[in-house]
Length: 141
Image (cartoon, rainbow, N blue to C red):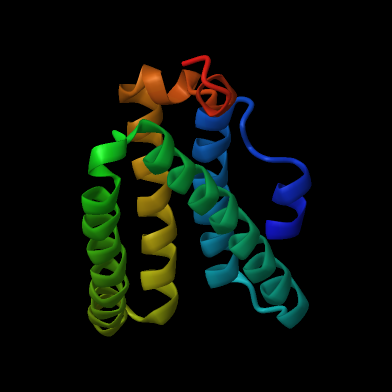
């Protein structure tokens, strides 16, 4: 997906694309949890990585484009701490949830929570729904 995004950067309709990619990630997690077919499971894991890559690229671009130059180092450092700790906290949460609910229900729960977060973000953030990074990437913002 990174190679595809090199040729087709997500700068048009970036906000809706971000919401769709996170939504797609949530859907793939639910399908993965319910799948009993190896090939389907492998395919949806591939798709989940592609969706995640799109969202990471857009979120990284937002961070770079909307942060003041004199604050970029500090913001990048804080972002790095949050990203690193979220992976550790997420692994802990996944283990606890799997222990409490069982493996398959915990993965379904995670996918559904992702879909819920997308629904809330899409509903409450008109700025995100209208975001187009191309306006800012070329100094037109």
